[in-house]
Length: 317
Image 1 (cartoon, rainbow, N blue to C red):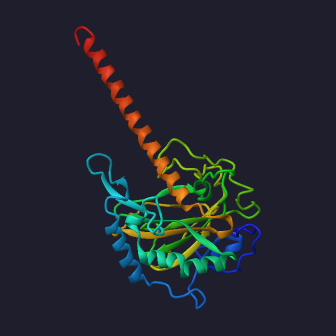
Image 2 (cartoon, helix red, strand yellow):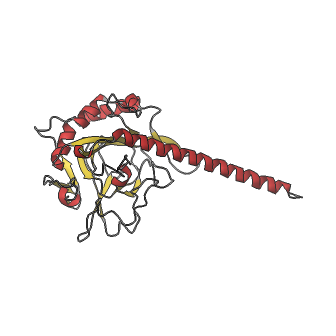
Image 3 (cartoon, rainbow, N blue to C red):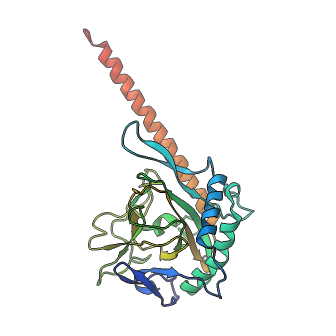
């Protein structure tokens, strides 16, 4: 299909202003969404902020964390992400304890309709996350694309679901200072990445942290050569849609206030639903990484103990 469009579909032609000119859905895989009478009312910035405050309280003890600040004693552990809070009541992957009625109603109602309208076919919610960027250096991620890390293996097929688009909902104003999203335009003359034409150097899943650089989709410098990276600065309650092959990255939040954004990922209903399978696979990757990290730490401690014992056994030492 066209860039940004599910295969076999012609997407609705639209564009919105960006730092280097208009973003075109068919050409760039990026578009700013707007509410209209056909898709229903959207929550305003105040409501979105209130919902986010509620969610952060609901998810206490269930957030992904990261260490920020200067090396040494000044580093601190802070929340950076909340996932799986729009699960249906029948969900078995742990999302019910964080379930937020307002976000689910928006994501599966007016926002889903707007995403479906842009994509030219019925879309469904695949996954969601709230990214938290604390003040003073929180957040930031290296260049990557989403699609390779979103696919999961299903019986009979490597991945039945392969088309993804993500709607970013700004909870707070997003600026370069607080680490707004940066998107890349593929240089003229180069084919857009897709399932049929993936990056040449996609690192694939590794044994690293699945919440950092260990997931598929990470880009090597050679892949991004010649890309034009642009800051996607926007206001609270703005909604931007981008497809799973659009390269993106962000810098840490160096402002004096935290910055939050929700990312709702959708896939075509025609490809089927594997939401629970995705979250189960993600939990398994995190469990395996934690076990491997623990084993590595024990091995390092044992190695140091053997070196200390050998050192002390030398006469005169």
